[in-house]
Image (cartoon, rainbow over all chains, first blue to last red; front, side, top):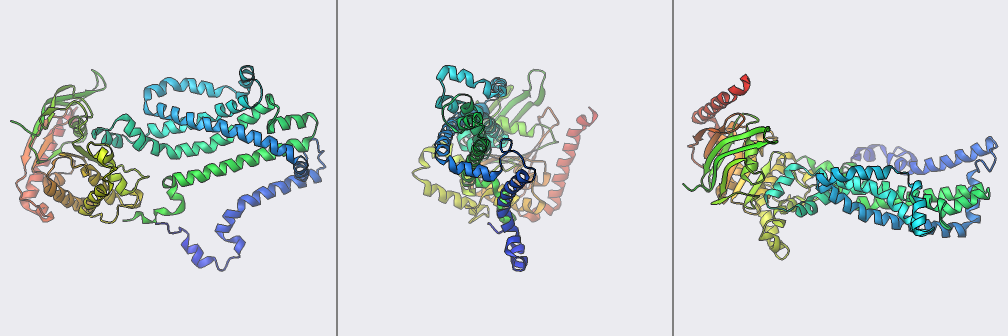
Length: 281
Length: 265
């Protein structure tokens, strides 16, 4: 069932190649090499061209700044992570619900879609002041902004997955007397899962954009607030520290989403791990 | 006369009053346990006929009666299989086959309690179509022919009284197709459902059916009917007998004439 598709590579070539040049090893190491390379290039550029620290601090200074301000950074990133995850959680629940509703009825789909697109086109930075009027500054507007910015891709993907159920399959089930509900739960939802998980990866990263955006405009805590405060004090290394930490959290959450996706919808990515080997019968 | 399936001057027009007239004055009667094949030129409304008979579409005029009752909505006594076998890739073959049991009463309520018994039944059915031991495989691990076998099992698992097959072997190579003809004949002879097979393969129609109905070009109606006299079970060798060839040839001529108006139009 899962024969490795490059079995020949392993058997014939691997022993002759040094460990670091084997295709598998290269594939695993490459992301790290690129990240490290980027930092090295950044550091070198800063030193070679003598770029002033208040324009672009070298990564070494950013790291020092992270160490120096470790406690406030930890505290504020915990705040950001919390608002992001809560907003994202609401987005998942609401996005799934609305996606199912839109996907199961073309009438509702056509009716609601223009409004949804119009709403999604509004820059969220324009909404934060309104949220502040309604809820005050702090956690609530950050959660809501994260939610608002991240539910859209989920709705679009889930509704697409459900709306594109094969008509033959629908007929088979309907001819058996299946209700619309049966069709959604037996076929529509499982079929939409790969779309759903793909959208989670987009949604979690934009959720960070939402919460940090809100924190920069109206909050007394969070990474966004930390960066705004640092920049007003011209502590540019600390601003970049915030940027790095945010990127790190984004990558970490993305990795978790990918892991969940692999576990839940392995059948959809079967082409990627050579599981097709049993296909010739 | 009381047929198991009866169509009385059924017409179906889709796309509103000015839309396409797919069926017009289509009438037929099928006895219980009979194996009927429907052939005709392409686009003659064969698939429309299936949808009307299974209650998925409502006829614009005329009546459809199945098992003594007028059809007004989907009937759970129907099993269906299509050219495209449409299996669910996230379920094993066994899970796919058991899908109808999760929908049709009374199985739906019994399924949880008697899961083992139902699974055994599904495995027996798999063995019958030559897929013994493949229940745990996923559909995408099976070849096209094996998927189509599984599709037949899914159509049969809830023991439907009426089996509707819409070009089920259309996408298969000739050898696999002929093999599955034999499988289908065996299934029919052991379980005796009423079968309506829509096909464009005349040899398939003659080999499998008791009676072959010929449809005209759109708007479709039945213009001819052939009884197939060969004894059961029919061997594949039957298809090479002169009488078989003559019947296929006669059918072909009928379809040629049925197509003629389309060619002119």
